[in-house]
Image (cartoon, rainbow, N blue to C red; front, side, top):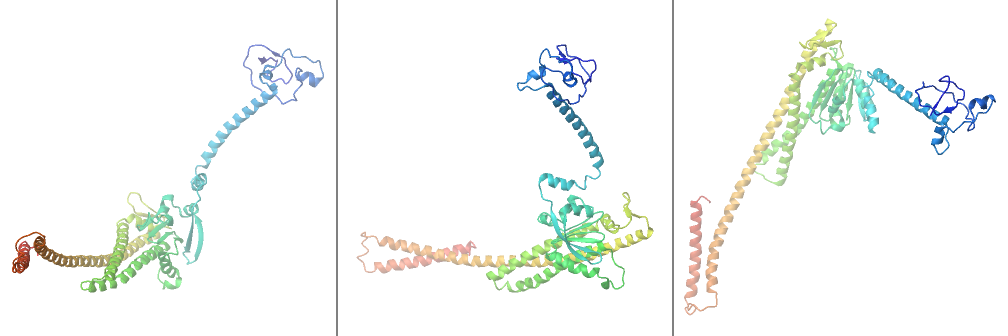
Amino acid sequence: MASVSSTPCSPQAVLLLPVPLQPQPRCRLPRLPLPPLGLSAGARRGGGIVIPLPFPAPRAAEGNDGRTVAKEEEEEEVEDEEDEEERGGHDGARDDAEGAEPSRGSGRFAADYISLGIREPVYEVIEVKSNGRVSTKKISRRQLLKSSGLRLRDTRSVDPSLWLMNSMPSLLVREQAILLNLGSLRAIAMHERVLIFNYNSSGGKAFLELLLPRLNPRNINGGPAMPFQLEVVEAALLSRIQRLERKLMHVEPRVDALLEVLPNRLTGDVLEQLRLSKQSLVELGSRAGALKQMLIDLLEDPHEIRRICIMGRNCTLDKQSDDVECSVPLEKHIAEEEEEEIEMLLENYLQRCESCHGQAERLLDSAREMEDSIAVNLSSRRLEVSRVELLLQVGTFCVAVGALIAGIFGMNLTSYLETNAWAFWATTGGIAVGAVAGFFLMYRYLKARKIF
């Protein structure tokens, strides 16, 4: 069924006639009060002649609940509005995505944490500025990445929650920061400040004790001050190497005393002290060796050293020649001088680290040699015990043969020897002589075979 009218969008009432459906232009009719069933809207509004409809509207007759045509028209209008809003929403979302693409990286991590329901990590750090001011603050991971210009994967080396995975020492140079991972010391050094994680650890305390006096202007003694990031790197390396040297000085006298006592005194307490000392030397040697390898890798990579030199300056590195290029010639000259100073600084600490590592390896080799000597000594003692056991076993065998003969004569059987008075003494003497002769024969045989 379709409605026939003179104009497509006429608001006047029309008669519904059974004609073939024809495509009509779509229009939106204003919402009018619903007329009584069987009356046209125009007749009700104008007070004219009431024209009864010849048959009820098909759409109203389709439902069992008496819904009218206006209800379905309202539903169609709602569906059309939803389609338009959906199309407009897609277009607006596309425009918003294109406009917000550059700024999406800053809020990406927070959105990920919210969508996954994971609480964003918050670090409690100590912030030391270049003027020596110290403050404790809490900083989230997103704020840390935004302020230092780092990437998420860069923070793995200094994240305190990943200390089991990142136990190897490292010094990572980035465009705006230097990441330090030296045992229990984990810090991020920037141009004007440094953030220290795990500041209550032994490494963090030793680092603060060395860094703060360096930032005091009274301790400069009128000389040129080094850049702040170099002061941080030197203080970190110095604190780490001093801790290794103090541990070596504590272990070395104890190992020397054990080496003098052990050849003549083998007790459980002495052997336990040797084991603990050897364990300390192994740990010390591994830490010193890892730090030495890190310094060697850094010295063999001049690109990283130059990146430290240009940090905080208006300079760049040529991608082809890897030379320093600065807008001001004076800054280039200063950067070249700092490169030489950094190399000399790393060489100095490399020598101290090699000395500590070599001394630890020497003491460890001495302890291992002493363990080998103790093992040989114990083996010789076990050999003596085994020889005595073998002699006793040979003697027991010979006596057992005599006991076998005595057992044979102890049977309650008539042998006609019990009637003679000399039979007892002859049997006893024969058993004794036979046992002694058998023992010496067995001993000569074992000695000929070099068992004794």
